[in-house]
Every structure is written in structure tokens, then in C-alpha cells.
Length: 436
Ligand code: UGA
Image 1 (tube, rainbow, N blue to C red):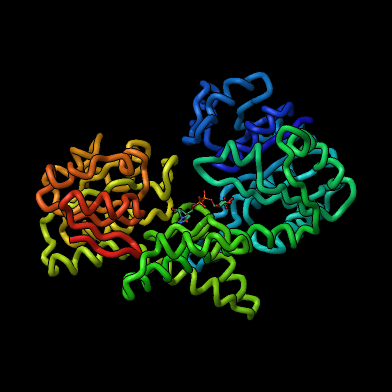
Image 2 (cartoon, rainbow, N blue to C red):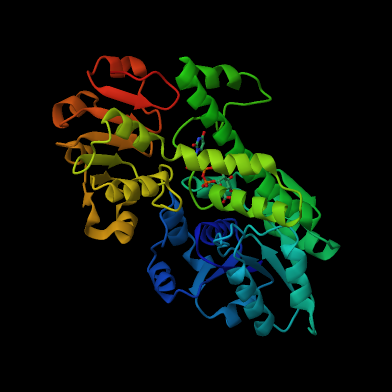
């Protein structure tokens, strides 16, 4: 099948490349000519495990272009995977989605299926279909096909999705969408495939992401409580996870969730629920708990140092919102670096994958280090913000050896307390006893 994909971010590009791998002919469209040129040279504009290999392997079935007219005209199905960032008031900004739809409308002269992969508020797909078909001689069929891939494992998640959800309002698009996804429904991928009405499909996306965010905020609150009462969150989470109704995923306490999805999707659903006069209170609580959680390491450090932190040096270990990505969107590290700088603290950072993006934000205001030794040397504290493998594998004795003050604040519970106890360091982690 001939497919066009609008947007070459995490959702659009990974979808495009994986659809090419299963046999479709895919044209990737983006307004950013630099990104398009980069992809033409075989390079991915985003870091995602296995993506570049697949781009090169499927060169014959992949085209990259800024010429959206031609791309949309030639396609049977057009996927839309552009961003829906958060507005200042918390609502989702749909400008990019609507712009792409306008472009599609002005470009094509036969019936098209338009598949919205971007996360959009409930009812948006109905509105898009209405706008596309208004005063139009041809017929547009709009499908809601929310994306469930996670960054860092995006390629794997696309081939082996937990489920493919397709929201349709007519038989024709239902049939075509099944053909698009048939290679993934079949062996060896065996993806569960669900069709439903469009609004329900839109809601599945928000309800899933907001539930996962809620699970994280919940375990973080329980962790904070564990600190107060002297329990250990790792043991508590383990004990909970044996109940199959709870499960063992998303129970890692830490300094809060970040990324381009949970923060934005919780805000958008909360905004929508208020606008509909039906506030989702659990979602409001999820957001509030997460905002406070991000500050935990900083506040604890300030307490430990009796507010005397000006001109001290902090090593920030790990900056991306999670391992395996260079994405800094809503990463807790960013809030912490900004805060540290505001208090006159010197900051060393270590994150080999995300460093380039950190530089774009902080330029020469902080010091960039190519390894952990360099970052912690002479430092007064180390904040672990991302559980990068290099950090997890790091020899604990080096903290004592290299730092001025071996005060470790671990926001991702990277080390076992038993090992820490042997290392003669001051170690604060989330929801566990502090080791001094
Ligand atoms: C999330 C969802 O997991 C995907 O299913 C969804 O498709 C995606 O959003 C999206 O809407 O596009 P992602 O944001 O890539 O994926 O990352 P996650 O792996 O879910 O992690 C999000 C944040 O939660 C990270 O900051 C991570 O450190 C944090 N987290 C995760 C915890 O603090 N504790 C946990 O136990 C799990």
C-alpha cells in the first residue's frame, strides 16, 4: 500500500520506517528541510535504537520529502504524526495537526483516509473529518489510531505493540486499516487488534497514559511516606507487584515522570475535564504530586547543607527524562539544573546521549563532562536524575575517592543499600533509609 506520513518525530518517523519494513511504500513528509536532507543521507534526526539501520535497510520503500502535495496525492492512506504540545493553560495545541489537514485538503483530488496518530483531545477526529469534508468534492475518512510506543524502545514497541487501537466510523476505513496492519496482526508479530468508535479510541490513549502517570505518582507518594515511617519502597513495591491485578510495571519510585507524553497528556485531560465541568480529581493529584517530586533531591541537599549551597558544585548524572533517549522534554534534570543555577551553584553534567540537547538549553552556564569521574571530581554533591547504565555500573568507591563531599542524592534508586553501606558515602535515595 502507498502511505504518506506527516511529521518525522518519534511517532511519525518510527511508524513510517516500521510500515516500510513490513512491505508498504512510505513517504515521510516534514516542513523541516534540514531533517529531510539528513534522512536522505541515511541519518535519523532522533536517537532511537535500531531506527537508522531500518531506514537504511528499507531505502527502496522509503522516500523523504518536503513536497507534501505530491506525497499526499500519491498516497492511499495518510498518517498524521505531528506534535500536539501543551499550551500555557494546559490544553493541547492542535495547530500542527490542523495545518497538516489543511495541506491534505488543498493537495488531493480523490478520496483519502486520514489517520490521526497524534494524541488529540476527545472529539478532535470528528472535528477534523467535518472540516475536511466541508465544501469538498471528494470524501475524507478520518481514523483515530493512537500510538502507544515508548521512547527508547520505539521500534520494538511498534513491531510488538501491546495493542493496535483503531477508531473508525465507517466500514471502508475499517477494511483499509486492517489491510495496513495485517502484517503486524499476523505471525510473528501477533499484535492484538481492536476496532472501536473514534471517541473511545481517543479516550483509550489519554486514559492509558494518565493511568500510568497516576501509578507513578502513587508509588512516589507511598515512597515519601515510607521515608517518614522507616519502610523501604523497593520491598513495598515488590510485595505489591505479586498481586497480578497490580502487576510489576511502573512501580519504580523516583523523582517523577517527564518526557513528551505524560506531563502533556495529564494536563490536556485535566484541562478538558474542567472545561466539561467534570474535573478528574485523580488526574489533578497526579500532576501536583509529580511537580513536588521533581524537587526532592534539591530540597534534601539544601537541608543537609543548612542552606549553605552558593558556589558549591553539583554533578548532575543523567539528564534525559529516561535512559536510551536524548529527549529532555519535561525532564526533572532540567528543573533541577535551572534551580541550582538560580542558587549560584556550579553544575557539572554527564549524559553522553543527551549532552547536545542540554547544551542547546544551558550553553556555557554549566560544565559538560564526558565521563562520571570528571563530573564528580571535586564536587560537593551528585544528583542522579536518570538511571543510565554507566551510572548503575559505576564503582561506588569512586564517589568517596573523587568527590570533595561524597553526598549522593539518587533520584532513581540505582544502587542497593547493601553495596552503599560498604562504600562510606552519604546516600539519600527515594523511599529508602538514608545512609550516612
Ligand atoms: C509513554 C508511555 O509509556 C507510552 O505507552 C506512550 O505511548 C507514550 O508515553 C506516548 O504517549 O507517546 P514515554 O513517555 O516514552 O512513553 O516513556 P515511559 O517509559 O512511559 O516513561 C515516562 C516517565 O515515567 C519517565 O520519566 C520515567 O522515568 C518515568 N517512570 C516510569 C517512573 O518514574 N517510574 C516507573 O516505574 C516508570
